[in-house]
Every structure is written in C-alpha cells, then in structure tokens.
Length: 614
Image (tube, rainbow, N blue to C red; front, side, top):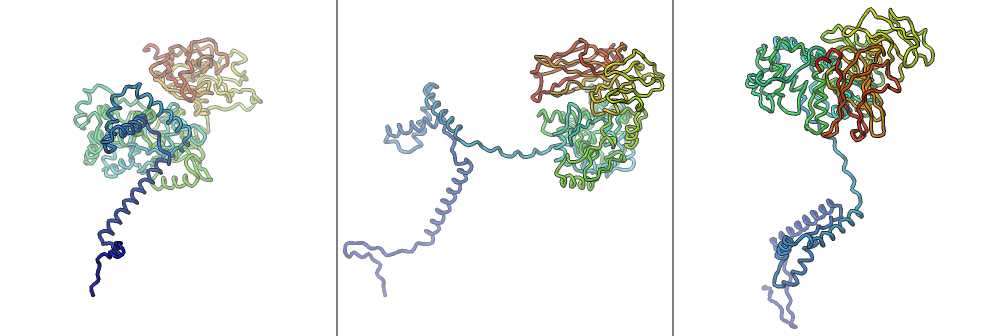
C-alpha cells in the first residue's frame, strides 16, 4: 500500500502532515539551550558580583547616549551602533572642556545620588599576613648533622658550640607574628600577658648560649681589606649564595676556610639573617681576624640586629622579617608558663638545647587548648630571664639560671626592719653608715659618709640618694642605689652605653624615664614637662648635690626632614624632685608627637672621661 503524502488542496486549504525532527536538529536545539543557560548563569554571576546595584555612568556615557540618538535620527542611511559610537568618540575628542562640563556635571550629580543612597559595604575580613623570614633553623640543623668531630671542635673554639645542640627545626610562624606585633623596638621589650618584659644581651646568652660580653661586633671597614674575600666567596652586591656556603661546609676540612664558611652561614641563616635570600656581604669584615671571633659580644650583636630588622619591616622598607626569630620564640616559651601548675624553677642553659620538635609541638597544643597565646603567667624573673640589668663581675661562658635567680633572691642589701614605720623611708645597712631616717627628697642632716670600697671607675659618691620611682622609699649611697635599681626595678628603666645614641619613647602619661649606664651603673632621669605649646625635656643625674660630676648629653627630636637638638650638661640631684631648678631644656612642640601622643627622642650621654674626645 502506497501512502500519499502530497498536500491536500480540498477546500482551498493547504494541510501539512506532521514531520518528526531529525537528530541533527535535536543537537542544534540542545546547543542553543546550553548557550542560553551559560549566558543566564554569567548574567546572574555578574549581577551578584555587582550587588544588584549598577555603578553610575561617567560623563562620556551620558554624552554618547544623547549623540547616538541624534546621529541615528539625522543619518537614517547609516545602520548599526558601531558606526554611531565611532562618530560619538570622534566628536568627544574635539570637544572643549566647557562643552564637556554639561555632561560632567550630570555624571557628578548622578554619582552623588548613588553614594548617598547605596548601602554601606561590609569590609571584608582581613586575612592574617603571611610571615616571610630568612631565619631557617631547619636548614642549619641539616648541615650540622653532617659535621665531623674536628669540625664540631672548630665550631666550639669560635664560641658557637651551643648551636650544635640545636633541635628545633621549624619556626611557629603564628607565634612569631603574634610576638612581632607586641615587640616594642624603642624600649626593646615584649609587651605580653599584661606585662612589659625587657630584652637584654644576657637573655640571648641564656637562651642561645652566645657570649654576652666582649668586644662589639663591627661589620664595616675599607673595601680593599675584603676584596680578596669577596672574590673567594663569589660575593656580589646582593650577597653570598647560601648554597655555595653549604657546598663549602660539606667538605671534610676543619681549618680557617671551614670556620669562615660556617660563620657566614650561621649568621645568614639563623642568628642575623636579613630580608634577602643571600648572606650579607658586610659579614666579610669579620673574617679578616679569625683568631678574635670568640672575643666578640655575639649576644648583643644578635639583639641589635633583631631590633633593626623588625624596625625596617614595620617601616615598610622590606617585605621579609630579618633577625633571629627563633630567639623570640624560645624566649616566650621559657618566660611564660601555661597550665594549672606553673614551675618557676630555674632550668639548665642554654635553653636552646631543651626545645625539641616534640616539646614545641606539645607546647603549641597546650597554647591552643587555653585559647591562644598570652594566656599564661610571666615567670621570667624566677627563671633568670629578662634580668639583663644584673651586673655579673665574674663572667663565665654560660651563667647558670639557678645562680642568677639566687643572686636576685638573695640581694646585696639588708633592710633595716627596726627603722620601718608607716610612710617613713628607711636606709640600708652599710658597714660605714649607721641607720639614718630621711625625708622624702633630702636628708635631715648634712652628714656625709666615706666608703672603703670606692667605685671602680670614678670613685664612690658620698651622701644619700633616693630611688626615683614613686612607689619606692629606698635611700642609700650611690653604689647601693645602683644595685637596688638593677635588682629590684630591672624592668622600670633603660640600660645604655656612654657615647652611643639611644632611641627612647615617652608615652602621653609618662613624665620621666630612668636611664642606667651599663659601664658604671650611674642613674639618669629623662624628665618631661608640659607647657602651652609642647613638652620640655631635660636630663639630670641622680647623686648627692655636693658632687661636681658633670655629664654632657644630647637630645634630638625629629619630624620628617625637620629636627630639634639640645646639647648641654646634666645637673646632679639626690632623686626625682618636683620643681627642678632652672636648667637647659629642649622644647618639643606637640606637632612632633606621633599619632599615639608618644614623644620619640634620641638620647646620647658622654661620661666625664670621654668629654675630651667630644
């Protein structure tokens, strides 16, 4: 049977029979549907990204809309938006500013309405910044484990034997970031757990095992002295390759070449790394006299470099954080106890050898369980840390913490209990000084007492001096006051060296700062007064008024390219007194204060023996 599929012309109507779509037509429809879904999805994403509120158009868009309408009406023969837009662009280019001002004004009005009606955007949560540092204890550990016995002896002969016991391979970057935020580079202290813990070279010695006495490390000098060394270690302006040094250390020899390579490597990867990947070429100046390496004050050098590198990082001068961050990490573990029971007993030193990877992981686990860093108890005083103000005459390579703590607890002065009355100051026993009751800022009699144990450098002051702190009633001779402040108020002042600039900071509510000389223990006061236009700043020396000892000092305050400077001599007063006699002072306008109201200064004091060189 043949089916007739021809059209039916009956009744004058054309009737088509139904036709099934082919497979190719079905694929075309599916592609169209997929494209439609993709366009719709991208449109939704765009709307979601824009928050549903389009940004106002600029002046060019307002002009082009009007121009295209007029152009399309006056040029009916022209077809397409592309031609009209091109004509609008050419017309906009030749328009003057006055002609464009009409559309600029319209765009500004629309933009103002948009800003006033648009909802405020919620700020995105700020991600924690990644810590970039060149301090790599793990890299050093990998090198140390291949050293021969002769090489280890060579390391010990240079004074770096404690590093052979390094077991902590990784830095806890979250802890280091937390500590850097609380590192006061002006005061050289960590402000954690509600307390301010100063950092001293002695702390570096106890933690890292490096000597905290000796000659200052100098990393500068004539270039011709290190020209041969620069060539030997392939030193460029960027530095010395760490991999090159690792290849040198992989050789079995243990002579001066090994010592030089090790010194460069340990400084550049652990103790004093900079923001660069390579080792600083300035360290080459240390290699000119390898016999004196063990005589340097490496603890002070490490702390000074750490403060400098952190300061540069905060100022935005470098992206990476230099300095020995491992010291900060272990110092925190040692001086802050966590848990229900705190064991403040002294421990063996150097602390570096006690913190293995397992011990660090366990400590971090406990910190996390307690809610984060800073939830512990500061016990640095009991453990001998943070006590850099102690004067230790008989220096040994590593002073045991137990001995340091014993010195603090035992003290050097005996309090006169029989003389104590409420709100009455007391004196301290001295074999040449009978008990004496005194007034707040002076003494009832003008008696002066000699001392059979004169000061080593300048002779003992005679007469009584009072502690400058308000909540302390101690009064004694010069040496007694110096020892008292060093042991009892170690965290309430700043140590400094004569003829060396010291950056200090006075807060908005701070009226004075106690300075103590490292050489002889003399106490100075940096006093701050307030006037109508700024602060007055001056330096006085604490001692008997009869003393003719005078110290030259210099104060500098900077703001941008401007600076204020005062150079004068100190007055000697028996303590911190109200109504200081008229003297030279530096007037610092309020405009020189920082955003927090702090007054930043640079102080330099010369001893009397150095005045001939000033």
